[in-house]
Length: 151
Image 1: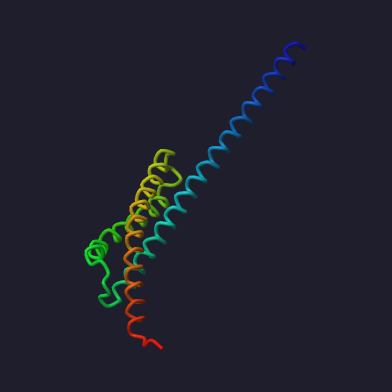
Image 2 (image 1 turned 180 degrees about the vertical axis):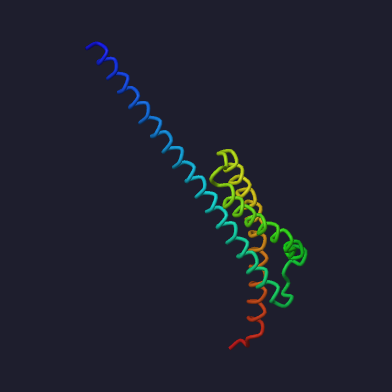
């Protein structure tokens, strides 16, 4: 009778330990899925910002010289950094495809941090471009106001 008590107690402890292990494993899996989702969302945002940058550059370049700050535009005009950023997005997406299942938490965190740093850099370029676009639009509006006759 005494041995049955101890066997039952050992089996109960084993069941509790197994349940705890499965619960912790589930938490880790959900956290990992959350990090992967955050990384994919960050990459989507970065790609959208690159497309916005390109669209704004096309608008500015399509306008005739309207007094836009030429030095600022010349610095922004370089498409090489945007190509590099887009290649980085593609490289991260390929890395996720190939290594997401085996990537460590640190590797996922590093990829997310790198994407965040690139987004901060790109947001600064977009802010400069937005100011240049505002200058172009203001000059265009001023030119249209001068061209229209006053009643």
